[in-house]
Length: 117
Image (cartoon, rainbow, N blue to C red; front, side):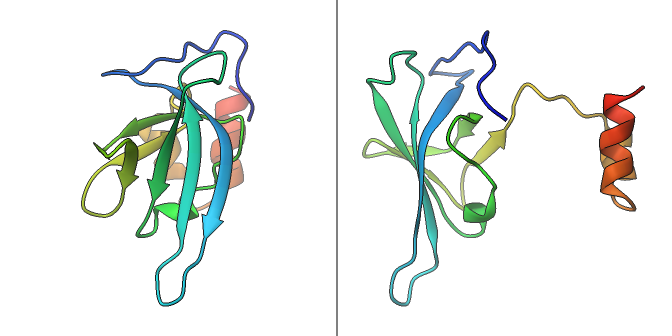
């Protein structure tokens, strides 16, 4: 998914960022990390770093995605791991509990029922 034309980007309590760059880092003896370069500025001038660790690196985020970040923002970077924080991919997509529970058996059925009522 790419950025909607009317996406309101902002920082603070209701933060919404656009992902500019994604890089997967694998170190010797370390678990992999995914580093996201994000911005809440339409000009893409002020960027921030978001580090996904401890399983969060498997989130299928790509440049152009809109994300909502919650977590520990220390030393100028968002740290999201199993101890603290989370990332919401596509925060404008609202799914009901019934849709989510029906996706256990068949993911296609859940998607199709949402798109074609």
